[in-house]
Length: 545
Image (cartoon, rainbow, N blue to C red; front, side, top):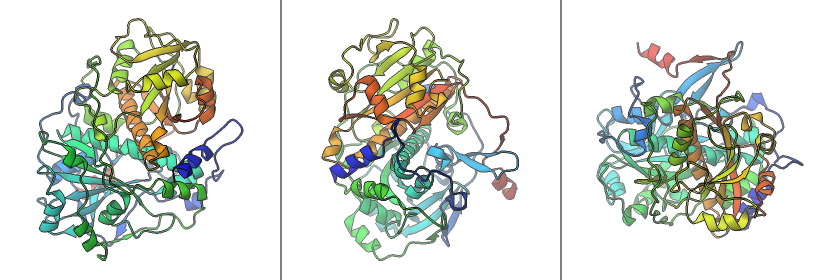
């Protein structure tokens, strides 16, 4: 299976001589419905929170607030700042479309969210619930008895609840074809980041439970019997710990869903039926093979976290509230080609991309960092344009020094702290190359900087299921870049279209283990004045009034 997922990786690359296979046009008649609904499912409407600033974003990464108690009210705000709608957009003479707090490739949103909850006032039964971002509601999929819930959480800290995430690959394949597998897992990483950050705002801790396999998760989420191109594929189970002082030890990392409970659920029909997303579908055999090859059987207990090196503390440059920042974030469609970023703002973004202190938010992922970042610096005040590298783990340096071009300088830029593992590789104007490698998109050359996320694929040989997890790490980093850009008065955008081996040739990468899995750009976005923006839940609020 390892060779199959690596074959997918190679075959899904874009190159100067051709792109990975895709439809080549947009079949608007079959555009997937962006909202999964379970028709006939009992629904709990959540109160719509008012927008509030929340704690200072810069300080949030270092100091979590005091924990809030778990209730339907705090749960509503947790989802409002992670998986909910953030706005509606509309152009003249067109239908409106929604945006979400968690970004998605092409705004297609393959990621579905579920909650495993204890009994709460206003939602009296424990159970498994699908989150509907359209209606900001919970759709019941399974009700669980009190004894069944206690069986699930018996080995976990008191108050624990769960978020499960799944992917509908068809939503991305409709537009992107074979490369959809990559984009779905970028999106899942972004969703994990928004969930972790929203939990942090509440003073809660979060952890992806590494041992829970796809078959067990699919059963508890009630998606195991979905068939065909619109089926949901269970990806991961995230534990949320409202008790911030809860000890997360090896027993927590080896947590598995109770086998007796799963056996009981085997013949239990879930509540509600999934809606149809499209009337017709195109097959993508390479994508289907990747889904099968990378399916996670479960049983891995993760890696012990690194002892994180000391890096410069983040100095807050503003009192920007994290809650508003999460909901305000937008993807830039174009860059102005003029704006620069201050040294302090750039240093703050770099520092936030490194594990530090308690490791948040990277402690969410139960493995050591596998991704380092190659920067195309265009307009950073006080920093020469050129190629730079941010080493996110000390373990990466020796391997990358062997892999990258021998003429690279590996010098700490003047004025940068020695403790920050950021080095200059080469000086020069790389704007044209950045755009060319990113499928000729000027958004990669018109910002303050662009970057490529270099991931170590060596473990994928033996563990093909780890391949999508590398994209999760990239998506998490992308979300921090989005928010860091917004906090600096700029915007970011993820770039999934790039010429993989064009980037590798530029820096000297000749093959495995290092490969670029995601590109990103930060700068001043150009506002499209033709678009109107409407509040996310204005219609629901009017209905409530």
